[in-house]
Length: 473
Ligand code: SF4
Image (cartoon, rainbow, N blue to C red; front, side, top):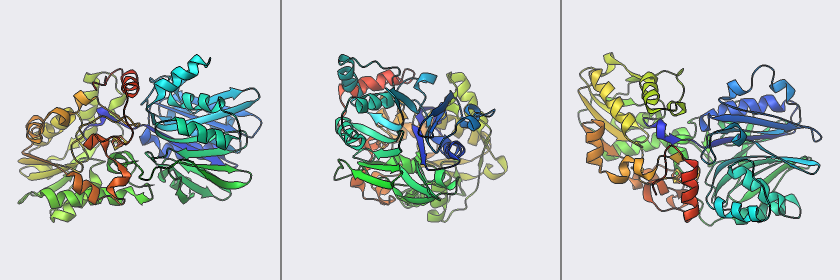
């Protein structure tokens, strides 16, 4: 991944019902999901009578230390790691979001982006609702509280009003509910560990606690874990789903299974496809841009028959560059993070495989570093098509104006980043590498075909939620 400063994950969610070791298992699950959000983290647990919670800014290991976990006692709970795709980065926006209603306390953790939030919020405010945060999660909580009837029915009514992407875990005094939007944009799976039932954004969070994968929560489905075990209600589901294709390309962990298929294999397949489309005759090596380019590079090497070498080494002890606030510090972070290996690269014609180019600025720095390390030729191969459109469904890409492929040709980008050649995977090639038919994916950031209509409210929301990378829609 060359472009992390402007391609940010959304959130990771985790829930567990029926455990003796609730807080520690949630902590471990969130640890495995840390790649989905590093700004804030939170855990809420309950024994059915009392509720304990702890939230903070920063990484899981920073937020939960000094005996905090021991104070979180209960047999069920939910957890959340967050990157602020909506609402600014501050503690009061950290999740799970707690709602106290008369004598009952609910908690909600959400991953995704509601595109009609502004209209719904206005409607609730005219009815007297007072919001404490600017998050989608609070909006969902208010909508649930304003409905009548059994919780499952209220949720279905709320989901009928929402437009956008949501995978969520919801804790009540009686159990944990997990739900996905009717398009199934974001992943959410169910696991089991002994008698405990678990919900998690990705299966890597099940692996870390030695839980078994049961199945995915289906688009539009509400799954309930309570004293009756596990049962589910099917809400509205679209004929064609819109799973985020970028989860396979970049966001999810390679050791996870999402949307019922392993990420590692899909990434390798993307690389194989890229080798079929744009092999470099006479090249000496295939080098991955670590670490998200590793699996596509492996596929490219196998598809092309070229040797695979680690020509760039990642320093794992450098924080993600986008956490840094200013451009100058951010660039320093990029240089610290990846270091070319001279003895591998010197005098060689190198095929460099990466998962995407967003702004191009980081790619330019990397290409320069590879040349300084002696690479004779640099042929950049990208394992997806050019990203030309912003995402409104929970992934904080840069503004349209900052996406280099939005206004520039591949030749321009090649010259800008300083590569000898540049080739992106074709749209058809990307879909061929996928384990589901193209019609079941959202690929709007490549095609501009948004599964849910984008309104003025959603673009305004985008502006409000991206004070730095303002949306120039
Ligand atoms: S626009 Fe792109 S990043 Fe956003 S949901 Fe669709 S495929 Fe995923």
